Length: 267
Image 1: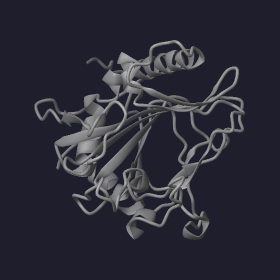
Image 2: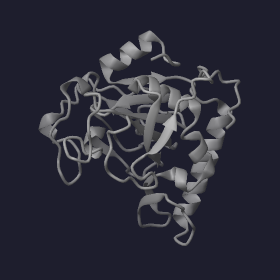
Image 3: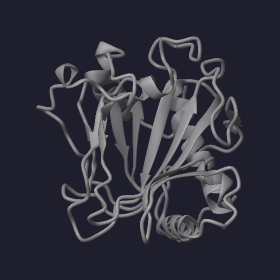
Image 4: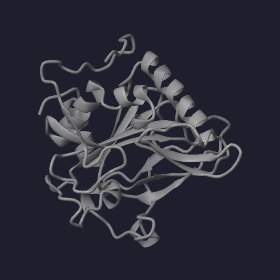
């Protein structure tokens, strides 16, 4: 189906299992996201603060170490609005070839300098419960796409996402049942790439794409806003805040722009 991505970009996604899309959100929207992430930090520091339907994954401390905020849309209206913005929906809809989608993921990922937060090699298919009654692979390609939007510049030293190009073509791999991470013997990290991102850039990746990230060893943060979409009928498991999935519909009457930086987001 048609959308904001070019044929070349679609072919690159099919080849590599991931795709960097520059300047999806302009500076004004990134500033809104940055402020919203700041509010999440304040909520994490106050155990009595109302967090709505969000779930904070933290380690105790002063301040607490934030691994991620699950369904962060439930804690902040800005994240709720921008997480289902037409530009994101249009990209996900084109990659999944469907104008109807179920949003399962709305997550805020933090990597502050020295906090040690890292994510071992894994496939999102394991977290979606692929291969169990909780998931039906509708399209045979995982039926899920994750969109990770950079709020800060992402470089080699502040914990970038790392991908194994073409790893999705092997399908789901055996994983450790307790952590849902890939066993070392099933991952060859040679050839891994870590795309550099600027604020407002997005990287999209599929359910079978092997990826992970190391700790932030720099003196600057690495915050990312993740939104995950599934094909209708794929998911059968309740997710925090989203239940079986929040239905989003691509508005065909509103052609998605390629997001020039001067455009101010609204709605």
